[in-house]
Image 1: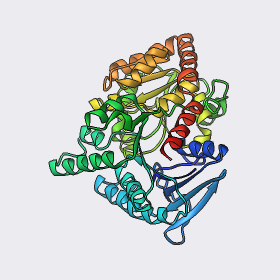
Image 2: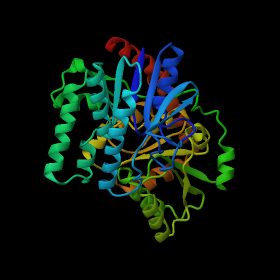
Image 3: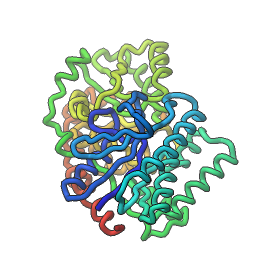
Image 4: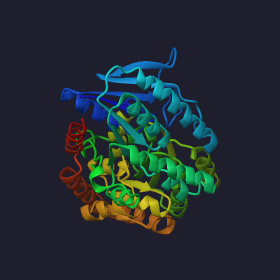
Length: 404
């Protein structure tokens, strides 16, 4: 099979970010199939150029995976208007680049952002091939819930585009069980939806990884580290974490370390300085291949989102990495991911937006390290049974076979 994926935010293990599609491409290659990826030429977290282009697109091959890097207007950390301009620029350039790919049996589109999914539909329409729509997060549901879209005309247009793609997709792949019910509510028939959670690479993230070099580099060898790894954007509610850190200033052995970048980073650093938070460290970004050691440096890990109803439906990928690494998760997200953590016994749930209970959860694990270690082991045991990525990739391959 020859599969074409359009994903402007695709990253390789050499970059910071989520590498699920790279791992999918490698898995397909091992089984005699090809996944060609059309991606932007900028990293979505750092905004740094990945490859120099001469013309519309430049070709990369990483570990046998073919990637076409095409133009995107650089608008990292700018206003939402300019980010939309950036998304539209990739939408057009990706269509042109995709049509230059000689063979494709299936076109795979992914959202968000939703405009690249529109590109995938158009390519599938022009080439008369099946269109698989992968829904990783709900757009525009999330941005409406966060108050980013308030204009009723824009909201109506966004919801029309969402419904347009759902109706025209040959099939829809979702990574959260709650998205299945959401799509049913949008009129999508059950036989058109497949739920396959991403899981994580249980060989990459293990409790046996040595995090000492990372602790030494950060100068935190003797500290209790609570780690957040991921985007520093509006959705992530890091301001609540900073307020929790303010409550923990009297505990000199606790440090909160944030690995990641995003639109809010500069303002978050300013707020941390204003609050004189010497217990908070912004550690920057790191390539995915180095993340196992980063997670191994922590005693506990944190996942946090804003307190809006639509976020109750999401399965954050970082939580699965935390679990595979054998680290307890402090979870400030309600909903389906809370069910995973509580069923596995792999962490502590705190109500989103509650900095007092968040600080208390951190304090509880700090004061009972044996409990924290046991939670981490229980989390990994659950993940090995239910969310091993090798199993999920096999399910995805079977879906491709059925569609083609």
